[in-house]
Length: 364
Image (tube, rainbow, N blue to C red):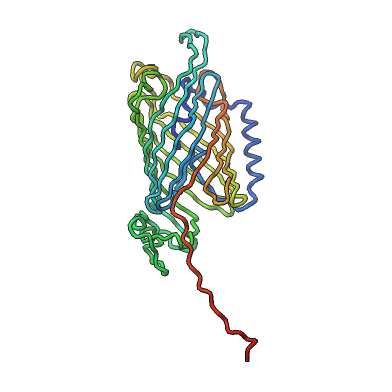
């Protein structure tokens, strides 16, 4: 996930709902109509909410995303965002992400307490993101809730073959994991996903393109099945720095798989500052303190497989804030993600089948 997708400087809007709430209500109603088929929730691109899923042992998940958000005062765009993920065993994911960023500031007239803001558009290399996801708990139907449910899956890195008889350790993800084994059904999983945001050796911070780093994000993700519906939930805390406030991130994702190629999801996400940055701290444009910010967005999107091998997916998401939107708060008037997902990795081994020659019953 990209923590600062929708960061727009300004003032908090409080909790007042705007006429956009009617739009949000229609979107929720549309999603409820879709809750009629078997489904599975998956977080990550194109959504802000992440989930406990990992690419799989020795598999790559590469996302090329064109991301944007806009409110009446400013806009932030990533054109594109390069997101590389690698599966280290069955339960661990390594991540590196870096965008080509564009920041747009629209001109604002002077106010009694603030000077006029000139308009400008700047672009360049954004900040780097390093992350590691660990799905430490995984439960299958009819299995114990605690025994053999915790693991790392790292033994699959060193011993990729699996014996025909699975042991309790293999069920926990700490045994050799072979691709020829059937993927177990999971009805509850939990992961953590520490992520570190770092500035690159460019002038992006003094120019106001990105906020000063480093900052650290520590979330907890849960994936669960309730009847035919799958849910992804995420709660995380961003440990800011002298120029970036600390904040909470909370997301809920409901997912549906209509076929093996088409999926659709509804997302509710809320990000709220836990403190404020004092005036005079920071670098460049980030030296002025601002009140606590809050962003509450509702989005609808999904994935569409584009090839027969299911290694190329189209990612789409669109939405907006359902609170009051103005030029002086951080609520986005629209958000969007359009991207391509490439899946790479070892091919599934095919178990050779020996043809059994039956006796010819026509002969005496």
